[in-house]
Length: 310
Figure 1 (cartoon, rainbow, N blue to C red):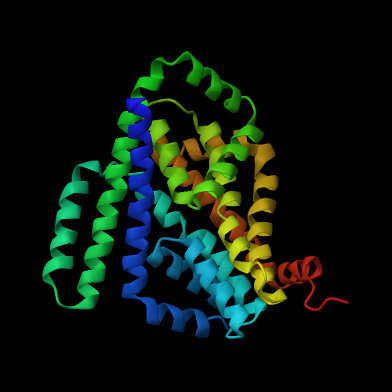
Figure 2: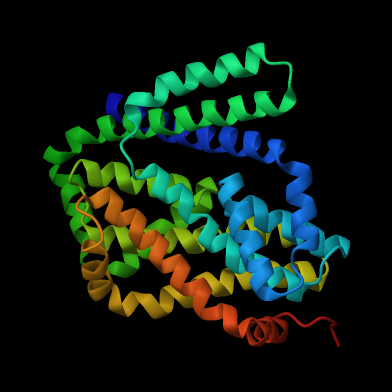
């Protein structure tokens, strides 16, 4: 029971840290971010680059997707402009996974201390927001360290090992687990953090981790779908495009998860880094493959959700 509570505490710290860091970064660049999303979307490529950079800055593809849905709903941009942003958010979110994969637990408390001092002592809003993001950064790695420590006793748990064995022999179970967990907590980054914590204790192999990461990409769409409920067709099309992009990507990659794991295994020497690289490759390939056909992709979404009901 103690280790279960410790694991839950680690997940809570990771969730809080990601949210606190995101809010600090978003507040620091809120006005410029909104202006960029509203103006730098003239072509799919520019929209893609804008979505990538903004998501990397805010550390949340969900936040940028929801803002984009709001802009389409308000008539600031149209759906065709939003497609490029959606493709970019999938690439920009890889920065978070890459960051989490490094072992930075030793600097978590100094980061929290430094950020707290910046928040308390500075009178400049920009410095306080930066301090907030640094505190969130520290809390993220404090949470990962807490989760990793709590999972160590599971190495000797026959029940848990048997459960992971079932997931490892059925990739669909891994995808389903990643989808449900991410939809429940509304954070694919937290799912990635849990998977990386499992990998550090040797409780999960690379193919199983990749299957769960695939599922997290689908589960992260739930927030955008919820934000689009009751909105005009254009806003719902943005949410649908996000879902369709990730679902199609998973369907295409899933049959080749073994070769893909072998490819990713050659990119790094440690399992956490391999998991982060798998996340990056999957999202980058999925988005870049669709980018040249963004117009056709937009037309497909329009067929699914028409502009006007008959």
